[in-house]
Image 1 (cartoon, rainbow over the protein chains, first blue to last red):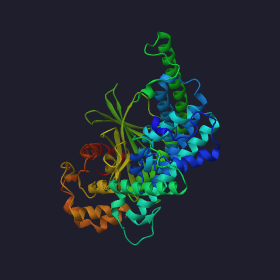
Image 2: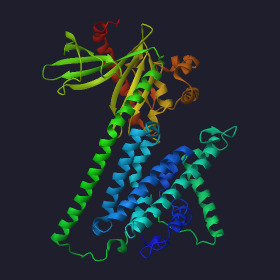
Image 3: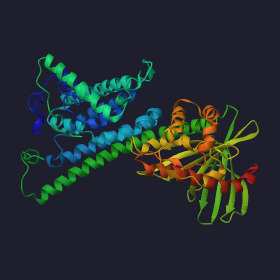
Image 4: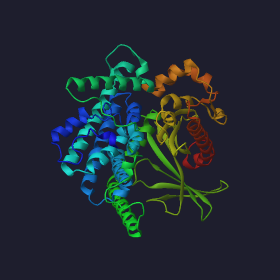
Length: 220
Length: 289
């Protein structure tokens, strides 16, 4: 996990909430900067709406799991911390799964299959290991919120890019008379979309005077 | 995994004492117990709403698949097996009205009628539920049937509805619940796959099978329209092509032959089972078979 060396103040005094939010959304955006959880990002982002719904679900799981780990970090045995993180994530994913099925059946019919997969999202367990297990509740909450928002914004951006180019529509409304490049709606186009947007984020980060791209390793 | 990840500050290595192992086991057990309590609580809090949402989805599926109006009456028929007495029970009652009395028909396993009575409340817990079907009447005439079916998919059960009109022609297939892989098996729930069942007649159903041959281009284009056209309107537009395709095999989803077969065999089995059931039930329910 040494590749995560760019995370600010891993075990020192916690950074401010604002720093943590900016870090999750821009500096260490999970998709565009850390390159984490790219498989689901490609799979679900054929439309804005799919990206939005899954993004909200990931945001909720990330915040709840980060807070749970931050609260119980003193009693989790270090040698079984990874299985424990997995159980915590699975509990929250199942809880959200049941809640969606009960109160938003139409949404659930659309993304129910993807919600269960959040258990295996690298970004969530990586934030628990890197941040929430070493920081108190409040900074962990903001770290989870920042990372969740970063993931949500990334999914929505990729979704909008692909829906517009691949299907000529945004949020289901046709804004272009045709389907300009159907390729972008297909899985291979998903990789190209992410690559183009990632390049843009790198340029943006450099323009802000930031560091070169952080590497999150090559996790799924 | 790097050395860094394995080494944890303060943890004894390389040997682990029994006390340490017990502590780890207790730690994991406590986490699992706590997780179980949270999940149990969420389940208890949501199960009522989940059931209501499921009933609502079902009702809308029945109404839209048979294109029913507001005046239609739907009867839900539930089938049970009484293993202790070797009997098959059917309970018919107005759909969605739990307070309405049910008409209970009893048959021996060889199909001989054993009596009928009016029952209220829930059937005894010792009965094994075998499935459900819905009979719709509109303006005094039989409007059609919706059959509930289930089959074993690639990952878990696939639960679906098959709608038949009064001449037993398939007018709709809808997957209600499944856990197939997104992008592969999950495609069997899309209208371009389920649309392939439309227009098949009772005589064609026995031959219903799956092929891996590619879909003819015109048929693919027509099925693509189903996503944004109502099924009755679509049937009017493509009657000729439906007539051509109804004797052909169902074209499997690429890379998901198992899921495709599961749904196709399920639809065939459900319809065949229903035809035998209906021959028994129709006279007892006062319908012509």
